[in-house]
Amino acid sequence: MNNNSISLPFTKVNLTLTSEAIDFLSEITNSTSHFAILGQLIKDTSVTPNSTSKRGNVITLGVGQVECSIHSCCTRFGIGRK
Image 1 (cartoon, rainbow, N blue to C red):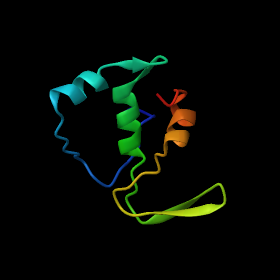
Image 2: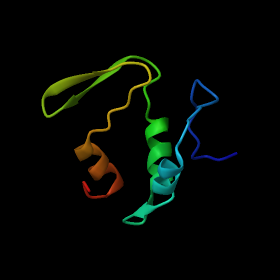
Image 3: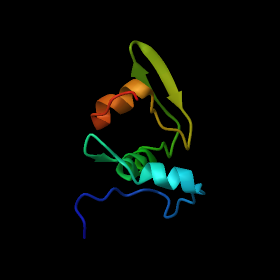
């Protein structure tokens, strides 16, 4: 058993990707795989309605949403905006 696994209330995610999207996801930025970033964003997806605070503002997330502003993603994954 993988001790790093996260238990999620769903067992399957279906994505339809273009060949261009697959090419982009195959790349790496600052030694971080784009597939790894996508996987982490899927794991961070809300499964229940909740909220978070960002710079003093309350952000409400519905089911299926993830907080992924450009600034939070850059900080979380150690990558630049571009």
